[in-house]
Image (cartoon, rainbow, N blue to C red; front, side, top):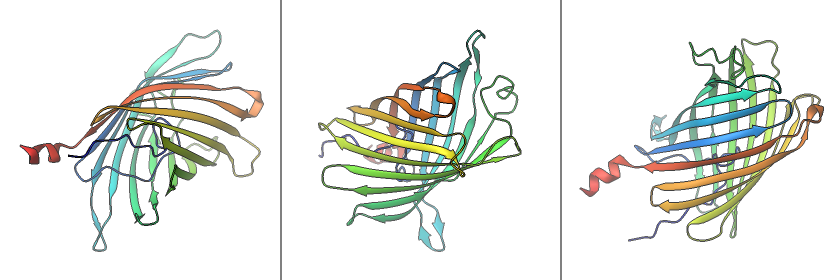
Length: 257
């Protein structure tokens, strides 16, 4: 019987930069995270962030396409100086990750990951400042390349607000590196830049590091710490997060019985 090892691929969570991998058909990946963004202007918190993913294998034009179904939402909070803490359900997100290219020989993998972000009806998330008005269409392209001593991931993302003319279309480039330290521990880091397409507004350059530790075959602990290198208006951000990942394969468990 093989010995399970931690996946050292840069991934979300603990990073924001994600990998192209998807769960196998019938498998679940559930991430439960606590995360905070500390800045002088506004402190935001995901007290309990639920990120649930499920693997399916649809046939497209006669070819099987490994796909991940994703739904996430946070119990969030926000606090500006001098104001009370606002708490409630933050912006939810639904998406499908299509892993359309896999070349194990070259160690190259590519996925397209369309998502829609929206305020959950009835939560007053927009009024509380926990979600943006309207919806946001998020379209990332995820690329992974495996090397001998590390794994490299690159993301290119477009975010297009819908039904909210006050918001701008933005683009993000992210690059992540990951490496196993021991059989059960992996370290990873990323650099990520976001701005409007004219490179003049909503600019944010972030560096972030993550650590993952497998404690059981299907349970992984993770943490991250990062900071902004550059942000418009000189606002400094400090990012901190911890969480646990559950990898569940009910079909495999049933076959063993």
